Image (cartoon, rainbow, N blue to C red; front, side, top):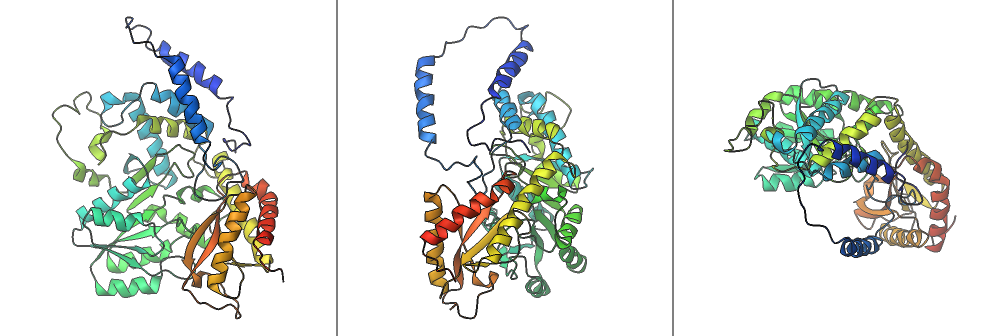
Length: 459
């Protein structure tokens, strides 16, 4: 799939932006001339060139050798459409602040909802996954003020922080050896009562694990709690055709959730920040109802500010998302889906190489496109130190990985390895660029060199 992950920053699309700006400007050609202060272009040039110099102090997030954190470059069409909108700077709160971009948001959000099988829904874009999850938990509390929020220990930390901000009772539930919500631990807690919402993580940010949604739906029938699906990271993978049967069952049942969050600025190829919250029941819009003495009078249509906790929101985010989904529709086996499938293939190939190498310890096979592994050593503490050395040696060779501190029980330790710590500092790769599939041999070659330089003994 075409995106901006080239060895150099893609610039050919700037011609399209100039042509598009001329088209946009022509739409306002009937306005009378208005004098404006002429910008000091020389001063702007100096400042922007200084910005470019400053921005060079970054990892090359756009390049396939960046295989560390969840930083996926936006598609060129998303960049162009967003930049084009910024010239007008629409605000998708009230329609008179972003008339065209608000309609584009509604269309784009409906397409995301359709991906989850929801024709009838309430939803909108947010500044990111944190705000989207905040709204979902806020609505959950409005429906059941006495209900506690629970999520797995591997759920994103935003849920506990949001609960604290909203003054909600929150509790973390143990996870199993595959970093998923542990069903037996959850049942024991449900038997004690007081649970209002269970967060099902569809793609944990540490390991990409999928909580057992089919079983959670079964428990909901027994205990009557609400299910919020936090698919901020993994939501789009339901379009792919290479999931395991177990993972596929979870995605097929996502329409049964009560609310869903997804982040287009992760796998949706969008610039930051662009999150999305969806509710299965449009009736929850009543909780957003508020009065404004000047805002909602330009149209009888629904103003997005009437169903959002955020007030001003960048219309440019909606324009970029709309353009991307127009070019790359959210359909199974389409170009967008094939890009995600390629990322998962890359993760599986790296996992196979790691599993076959006796220098490394692997955890469970990746469910999405995230791989975790650790060096083999006499002790867990020693393995953690070696992992940090590999991380540094890989960076010296322009391979950018990530480190994660995870429970030792995620890994099958050899009998000779002393578990002197409960957690292990391991290596982690997020192979979220479609190009990563073609770069796995190169990544492996550099990792092999880094491991030797870090003094991992070869068996």
